[in-house]
Figure 1 (cartoon, rainbow, N blue to C red):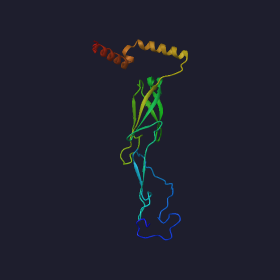
Figure 2: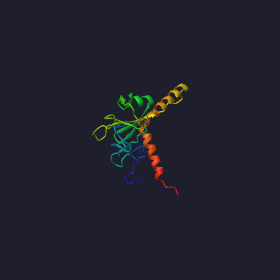
Figure 3: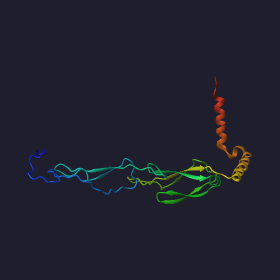
Length: 191
């Protein structure tokens, strides 16, 4: 009847029934430092459960990062895929890419291939523990044009014919890939 306190409360409070504590919801502001990662725990001292005959405990907030539609995080580096059109990939050019600080201009050299990565130093995430800011790594993805007019398709056919006169020099990856496939089948012995 005394809940282990050694004394009985003859006039218990109608809110706490003599326990000395009440349950209530409380909204707290939590300062999230830049650079936190999933799994980071933030401690709010004294904001946990009420202590028995002592101070309140601590509240721990576990951080889980939401997926971003543009950036993917890799440590302090950010990764993003940048679509470019075929003429820019062939001729080169410039385009604006987003960073967490705003837009920057990315220079695309001529003859850029799909998968080429460009590193923008210091455009990543600041570490919670200090140290260097990460980088933004942009991976180029050449976008194939769609819904072409018949005139545009004819121009591409003419362009393709002009490339066939150059042989291997216009598409070295295709030539080396085809050589590898041929060697693979030559090496395979069918029983």
